[in-house]
Length: 341
Image (cartoon, rainbow, N blue to C red; front, side, top):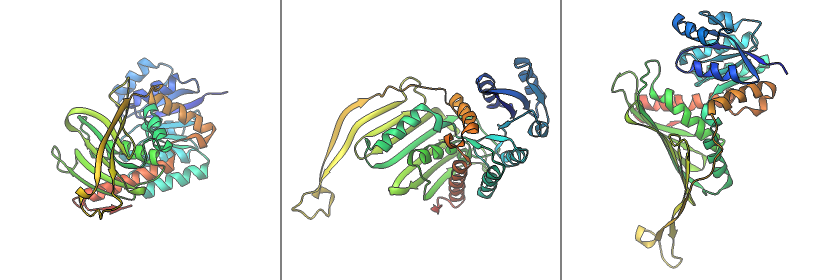
């Protein structure tokens, strides 16, 4: 079977990782790389002498020698580059977020449908083995009804000037939550601060509400002394922690819960009228076959080109995430006002 011929736009911080994966995957070959930096292109050329390099994205987007385009550029450029790629009958892998407006996302989804091309959004964590395992726990009912989720995604830097920390980091957690619950949030409230740049929030606290009244809180920050990538899931039966920084054992399952007994012969209108107790069982560390999420994501894109139904991050999912982030951003500007999606 012939390899998918890939063109990559953007060789910055994340681009080289994409180049490496698509160039080593048995199902693809990187034909060309475009970037505005000659220095970056020279590095790519030295490492991959058979790959064509160019400063012109248009040259790659329109090349008849290329089947699929991978876009790893600043957020503001995603819409225009994806649109041009689809119009030139290319399959597209675009890093998150898909675009900055819901209308743009919907236009790209429709264009991909009309051109019969795959539109794939780089929500990498839905391809993470740990995140996929947590979804199984949630769907199996082992945790019981989910009360709330708390996600922490912090570090000291890297500081961005094109988008705030909500767009940069919270997109990951929203994509994870949507994946876990197979649904979108219904409302959100968010507060944040631009301590380094008053126009760009480097710290955000956002609380989404999902169906069944599940609360999902997100704390993202570029201004934190500790790098944390953790999500706590609190269910009525059990609790779970996913820690992306623990590369050996990312999931811990806690057999802990609060048991509340309401007396049948009493009017329980006060807290003391209930009998409650804390149940603490064992902590389990599930054995997980760990993977390299980026490699799995790239392979999934190639598989989706042959069978689109296999994709976990289509244009539809990308649009849902953008919609949720825009709502949180609107709440930020309104000092925490609750925004309904």
